[in-house]
Image 1 (cartoon, rainbow, N blue to C red):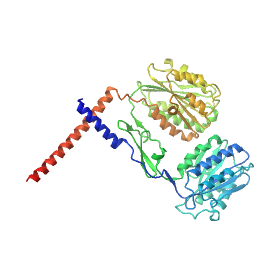
Image 2: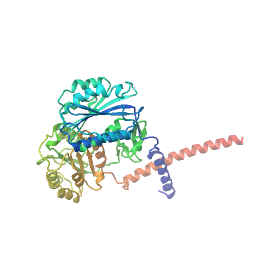
Image 3: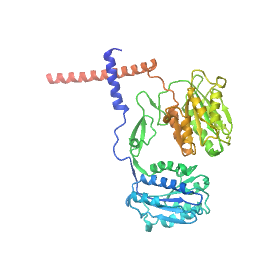
Length: 489
């Protein structure tokens, strides 16, 4: 390629990135919440410890922080319940965000029984009435109740919750710890996936605040706020966004991630926590998470090989690397995996990965990149530091995925450097899908842009652009010549 052609290539590439590769400038507020009558219904029965109740108050404050509070905007009330119901403050009581936050700080637990049905009944009969500050029902005003509970109610909730929904109240149900999940479903509005949330303990309830901040957001510049899943470029649309990719990448089917993967070989092994704290219904979500990652991998004889190990009090190899030659067969084997349901020996599982999973006798290939994805939902019952360190010293790329009560320190010990790119956590099993999307990108082995094939592709594209530009210049020249002839005549 001549020096002049090289210079022109560089200028054209800069032009392409300037016009296509950069997101449009963002402006305006990040989020405006639509006018809402919001009532929190908070369980403070004797099973909720004082320190846990403080964590609930942090959650409430974080949600309130994101609202546009005012007489003509969002109004907030709070019901505190146990064996009885205490109206801490009404929808009409506080007109400013600062006043609401101060009022929340002063709330104290009642520490008696759990009369959830009675609390919802009180919300219908009192909290959502005009006398207490609720506005007349209209399409422009949302009516929302958020119920937080950690136990089985001592009264019925099904019929009274149905009445609440029929009256136009959108009901969210948040369960903590040993809560009865069927009760949460009876309380919540449809779609249940959007209105029912569960966390293992009060220590992680504040992680749900982001969900409700988004739920109340009527118009958002999600690109500006960083609240999006685009891997490369985010393009704002009113209240939403679309994703795009830089030049040389293509947008994957998920509409979020970008693909620059070639057919590079990779040995990928999942280490999956099958301890009793995961619970059967969540174990099915774990299997969906595995198959979501598998779907993004280019499986083949000289491409990606996938292995699966489940661990609890012991370690069980579900299938070794290379046993299955297609995505379909791998995903079928994952679906058939049975739940071990015992303890949590994460250190033992990582040691198994080192001693067995990547060994040649178990299908490991010399010279092929080794990737381990470790999933856990709780504290390990054994020591993990030595095994985690050894795995990274051997050059394995280790990803740590934690859910619920997973221990931050242990996850960081497992994850490769830089930790921020190899460490993922969510409070809720249902949110694992979002982690899966991010991992789909991370485990992709990108082709080297300096390789000959990449250079040829680049030069070919530039030459095509030059030819197109030359034709346009010739056409313009002809038009100028024609105009000059007319002027001369």
